[in-house]
Image 1 (tube, rainbow, N blue to C red):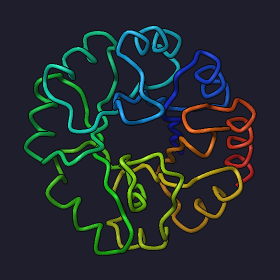
Image 2 (image 1 turned 180 degrees about the vertical axis):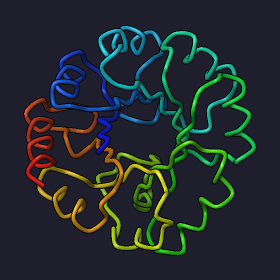
Image 3 (image 1 turned 90 degrees about the vertical axis):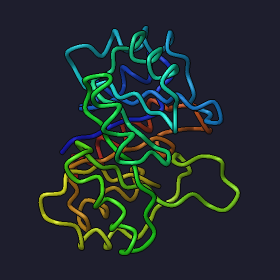
Length: 211
C-alpha cells in the first residue's frame, strides 16, 4: 500500500516520513495553506527524498509561471492538482512538464465519484478527499473524513489515494472498509495546523502496519 505524508515543511518531518516507510511525500504550494512552502525550500527538502520516495508537488489552480518555477526548483516526480483543474488542463500540464498527474476530488456521497469519469485516461492517479467544511478556504487538509463505504462504487482497477481525516486511531477502519491502494495524510499527523509531529507520524505508520 502506498502512503503519502503531505504538507511537509521541515527536514525532521521528511525524515520521519521516510523512516516510517512513506512511498510519497507531498509539498504544498498554496499561500492560504498553513503547510505552504516556497519552491526553494522544497528543493532543499526534496534532496533528502531522492531515491527513497516520490516527491509530489501539490498545487491549487496554479498558473503556468508558478508551475514552471516549482518544477524547475523542486524537480517533482508527480504533480497533484487539488483545485478545479479541467481534464484539458491536466493533459496540458502532463505534456508541458513530462510528469504524471494526480487529480484530487472532494467526496461526500457516491454520486460524487462520477466526477472522475472525464479524467479517466488523463490523470495517472486520483485522490479522494472529504468536502471542505463551510467557510474553509482549503480544498484539503481540513481533518474531515467522508463515508469510506461510498468507494465501493468505484471500478475495481481505479488507482487512488484515500485522504481526509485519517489518523492513527481510524486508519485501521479505513483500510478495512475501503481497502484503498494508497493513503494520504496531512493534518492527522500534526500537533497544530501546519506543524508535523514526528511521534504522530510514527504512530500512524504503526497503526497501518497493525491493520
